[in-house]
Amino acid sequence: MLSVNQLTCIRNNRVLFEELSFSLLPGQLMYVTGPNGAGKTTLLRSICGLHQYHHGSISLGDLPLSQSLQDVLYIGHKAGINDCLTAVENMRHWSSLTAENDDIDQLVSKVGLAGLENVPVKYLSAGQKRRVALSRLWVSKAKLWILDEPYTSIDAAGIDILNQLFNRHRQAGNMVVVTSHQPLPVDIVDINFALEYRF
Ligand SMILES: Nc1ncnc2c1ncn2[C@@H]1O[C@H](COP(=O)(O)OP(=O)(O)OP(=O)(O)O)[C@@H](O)[C@H]1O
Image (cartoon, rainbow, N blue to C red; front, side, top):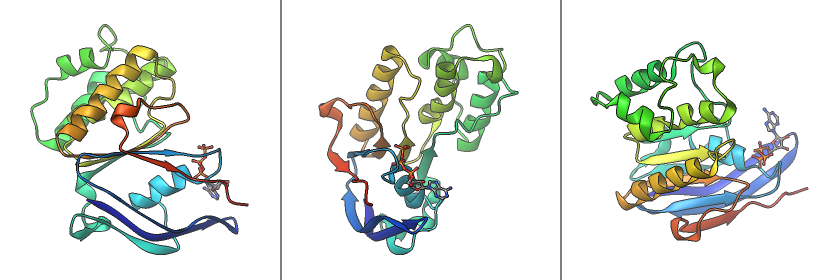
């Protein structure tokens, strides 16, 4: 279970959220919404230790989240891929981090990049780059996925693939926290969490 307790975050003298508490149970997906600047990215980055919050605590299972980071996969706005390498080379790198023998050819097809295996990522389109970045979801063994606007630049077919993947992750007893400015199918959302813009 992910537990966020009394989290407060202030940026540029503006309180983004104050004493925010929620829990996410194994098998649940939380969909975080809110207007531009409300603090969605800040919340996600705070959860995975990339942003220093002012007050509160976060735990995953029985441990503070800072001691369970191996169970967390964060994919933010930036793709986090090596642009000079091909999609396959990036995927091999992520796969090597999990010590699993992933079938990279199969992964390339699953993410819809067949035929583009040998093209350096810098020559791919925005949506194709995003697909390369999201291919980490297939090789990840993390229990908690924290995904900031994963649908950006992704076409309808890719969105379907992502939603199926989220469902599979939930059904395996894992957790997903996702932000998006576009609606998610109601059947994959367990918790709707709307952050308001605080002045
Ligand atoms: N690196 C930074 N330094 C200082 N302030 C920042 C920084 N990044 C974001 N902020 C401020 O924090 C506030 C919340 O930003 P955040 O990116 O968390 O919002 P968001 O809800 O994710 O917005 P969007 O929907 O536009 O992505 C904004 O007012 C923004 O100006």
